[in-house]
Image (tube, rainbow, N blue to C red; front, side, top):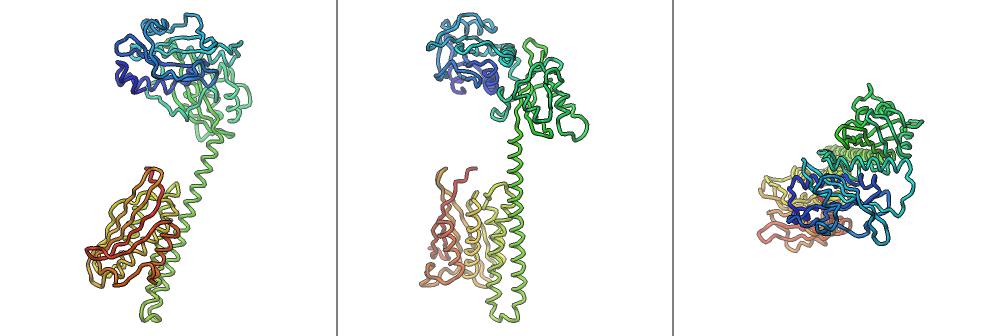
Length: 493
């Protein structure tokens, strides 16, 4: 619609915004009318109309099987469009049109904004299935007529009241027609069923809907006067009402076809099961977060016990190897605990790994034998939990290895972790480089055959769990470079 309006018509951007607001609401008019709607706008030169939007009804058969958007009609071809646009009134005169052996009644509704007619809605009703209308259909048609007059007067849609189309109740979900005092004139079967779910046991006709709704709502204090007014249809508002037996979604639409309010439409939908499922999901999310929190606490307890055992080894560990092994185990457990702590704060099983990488860097840097700086560049991004946990252990081992074997006591230098994500929306890779400017690898060193436990852990996790590759080599300008190439899920932020 944007392109057609901007390229083919003389309407302004504020006019276009009004049309967008109208189109977001006109499913209501189509369903109440049992009719197709096509929005026609005069072209720049004024000799033709261009159709910029189309809507089919959910409550009846369509009159247009083809897409009408973008079609052009010369002025004079459809006199009803000309009359509605030029005279600013709803035009219903004329005989039914025949389209593929189907009789179609056409009406033209001018679209007015700030006293100007922007275009015309052609309302097309398929007459092939016309029968004696029921009370429901008569209520629908009368409400459609009132809305059409409001559109022609520039009183509908309501500015600033654009709702989420998928979330808002529709005509078929349930409809109640109120008079000017807020008394129920008609309630559709679905609407009545929804109120029965809330706890109302009798008919609604004749009741004051606002007071009846407030009495059914779960009371947490005095009667909610705002709810009474909303359910009485005084203003265009939407809310949810929770009763003892369920939850319904309400939307009030004041009807002002000739200026003063003559009544209201209240659309409603039973969302009891939807809210129940949402609460179950929230409960599951809270349970998962609590599990991650407890796992983190348990891991921290294990780390604390290992530290305590490490301190008690001084008299029985003259060369310090046992204590060193326990300290390494503490850091491995700690890296996993960091991941679970992050997961305990999220609603899903994905984490922002940059924060985890920074914390792992800070934890491992505590063992630095000298004044070795550390930094992270690039971005890891969002990673799944099954990737974040082994990657945090891999990063811990590589950093620990670089600090222990790349630098001596009192040495200065730098350890850098660089992350680079690449790929498409469906396939992505993460390239991680751990680079130090230390003493480099000893002559003849082979990372594949090396007996170092830390490197064995890295190789097992990278190739076995992460499905990636791992290389370790001397850097051209001195030091060591370790490169990880891992497949990851695309970061859809």
